[in-house]
Length: 246
Image 1 (cartoon, one colour):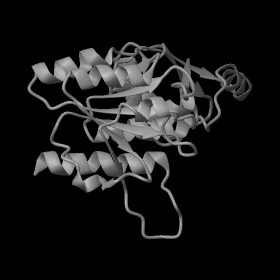
Image 2: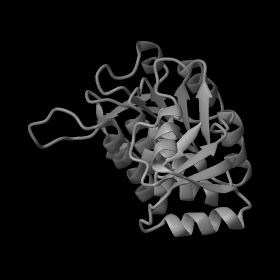
Image 3: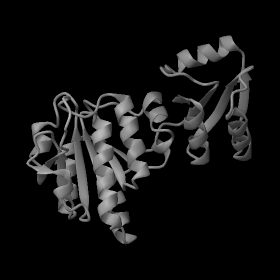
Image 4: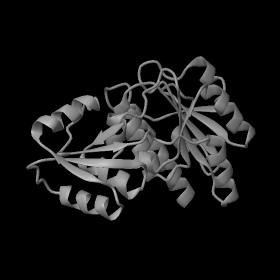
């Protein structure tokens, strides 16, 4: 797997997460590349410089769909976790678990942005399904600004089954839905919580919705009927932060 872009590559190196080699574009002296080269060498990661033709070939080989900003890194795929283990660890360390479960988020940019907000808000972990969902590709990693290397991520066969398991562990399951009966600020997020976010077009599947304890909405004042999924996620995440900090 390849990732590109200054922030994504630098954070991957700093996280010491499976970076195998870093490639630089010859002649690219943009701000930040020197810092990447320095940190990579400190971590013992080999670096090489490619001419423009070979660099473009590497972009094609990696199926990179975003601007590389003069740097590409080859990494091992994201190491997925067992979300039940993540929740158990939170309990054992005296923390109140907070997990986001994604049902049908197919846009890698949305996935990456949600992962980024999850890390910034201190969530315990992110769960998404193996089917009907974006994978962790270079676009998702770059959009996450490196957060994909820090927040625990679980890729599960069946999101609804996983939610059922988390309920049995004592977590409330709260679905974010435009037609939710309650506003998101009315939920007690100081309790162990799973926040469920469905796709922008179709929302969450019926199977996943059946597992939810409550459905909440974000009140909108403008003419547009809905928010981008990653924006909505961030709003709810930081309401949780606000409540838990109070």
